[in-house]
Image: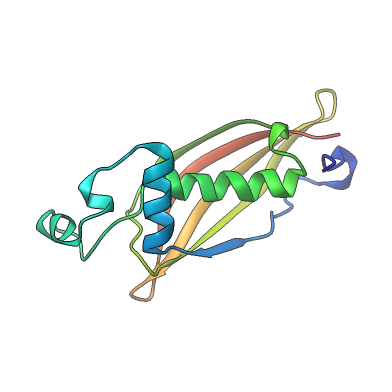
Length: 141
């Protein structure tokens, strides 16, 4: 893949929103790959006893969805120089997470853009932010 051209983007541009329905299979596969076997992510009874309505997705699974959206927009994962974010809300099975962002700054000398990024979902008619106050630095061609 080729990295997106710096000259093809403008401060204020939005990244395309990427959606994903979170499934128990996704969370199970993430736990196996990452070695995080916390029962909140695997056992319905444990998650309910902790006060959740069911199994919750790993925060890093949700962040991974965001990172993938940024990397695809950039054209290559190696273009993503940094990514920071805060985890703000749990994600439950069957919910649709939406990863997005907006370019807030550009450095033509370094050919980098700073992107405010987030993950949202709709719950009970309200927008929740499982990942908020995120920022990515992306090197463009």
